Figure (spheres, rainbow, N blue to C red):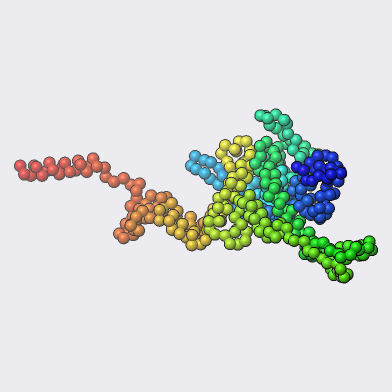
Length: 434
């Protein structure tokens, strides 16, 4: 792309010739402190640290991490009778309460998700004693170097931290949009332009604040100024554009200041910031209304459905791969207890319980357990007409209206016996007639 031509000394900005001269002239044309120019001339990709300075990015990461860290993680075992929770397992204790490292479980998930979205992967070392896991140690992704082979089919890799070699099974690996099973694709790589614009907008705004909000402009003089007068004016304007110094400039007679007009970027700063924020929130699949406290039930449902649930499924797959023993993978699995996400308001919950009790797929004590209340020992199921109760454990039917109890395990008189008695009675009646 040709930025400009000069008759005497041609300079092309799209070639390697006279690049420094081209950049210098561009800076003189656009201003030495132009953030837009720096963005054009620089091909440096935005870093994780810079991305976290964008308010919407930080807000989305914090909100998602807060949601995930508040969901209990459980270990389940598949049996012939059905699925059973495997309680009091060391692994779930480490991931729900205390990792055994300096980080708590909530801090652990916060760090993991930041690296998951913005880094090349999220990694945690698994400290084992035999087959038992003692602790889980989060490792910053910038300290992790992955060395992989070049075979496109039989992929393999080793992990190095501070020059120490580790094998893949020694690490928990949470990878986003991976194609090799060992490194992630950061969310900035896939949306570089949006993040870059948002970050440069912040830098531009900071630059305006540092200048005290003073506008750029030019001086118009009736007569030619001496070098001393020009130097004095320059020094005065330099002080005026420094926010922490005196900002008064006295113009001599014949000198007039003409303010430069606003650029389209300056005039639409607030609109651009709002649009950029919404675009970033959409990338994270977090409705902006959730972050500003104006969300509806539909917004919260969409957040859980499109943001949290796919993320939890990805995390669960990684936990199954790295924390389960080979002989456990066929019958056991990790799962987040998402009931806490869908509990809703107290009115919504009670209406759902009413439907469950009415249709007999919930019992009273099960409802009380969901509400963290003590059980009352009521084990009856309503069979109909609000007057027949069935106990599935004792197989008893109780009818309150008649105060009668019937044991379903006791067989009634066989139909054959009734028929024989009836036939015998008929024969006896015939003999009496004769």
